[in-house]
Amino acid sequence: MLKIQRALRGRTVRRIIIILLLVFLISGFVVGRRLRVNYVRVKIGLPAPLKIVVLGDFHMSAAGIGVGMAKEAVQEALRQKPDAIILLGDYVSGQVGIKNVRPVFKGLHAPLGVYAVLGNHEYWTDASKVRKELEADGIRVLVNENVLLHKGKTQLALVGIDDLWSGQVDWPAAFKNVPKNIPILLASHNPDAALDPQGQRAALIVSGHTHGGQIAFLQPVIGTINRITGHGMPPATVYGRSHLYGLFKESWGWVYVTTGVSPGFAPPRWYLHPEVVVIELD
Image (cartoon, rainbow, N blue to C red):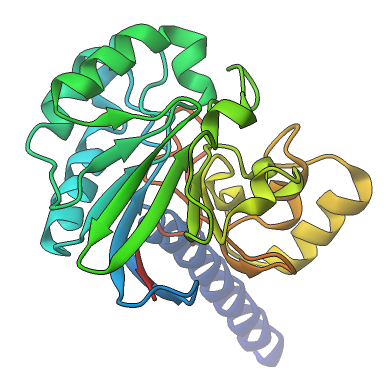
């Protein structure tokens, strides 16, 4: 009788453990579908603060993949009432995703404008068509060029470069006529811009591309392994492998790598939120 009771208790414990593991596993994917707003403050020497919203990696594709999350992120960006909005590329994954660009970003606006750079997925599909769709919504696409943002006495140079993987980066053109002694915000889909001396002219670089490594647990360990082995998520991205997501202080300035909005056809996020980034610059 005692042996039977012990066997039953052992079986019950195993069932509980299995159930808990399943709950833990499934909960991770549920969290990975919940959009989060991340607020950060970065001091770059502005006389008065500017509020910037950053969105990246939408990966809209077939069967509506990424579209719902993209719409949710756009609406959340508008609720934040920023001075300017920056989009960091990878709007589509495949030709069929292009048709979603104009409907999703229609109505996206900010007092100082909405700006975009292109990512590798634009070039893997049709960058000219994606750019045309973005510009039809009043979004200015910066390809190796810059614009000066004004708010009262505050001035900020926004520089956008072409994709480091698949585009043609022209640093001199990107920084052409940027006034001296004006803080620079550099938008680059790929965070490896932080490794280039030209990119390090910026007080802050905002990037995406990494998808935050797709999972949230053990990020310091994963980042260290990626850095040592030279392999991992994301492929062929040196800075992004050891700086998967978040705000990083460098000797020359700051870098923010966003987890993005949707992984597209990549594996689902696990305990890693998609995000809308609100950056208070002062």
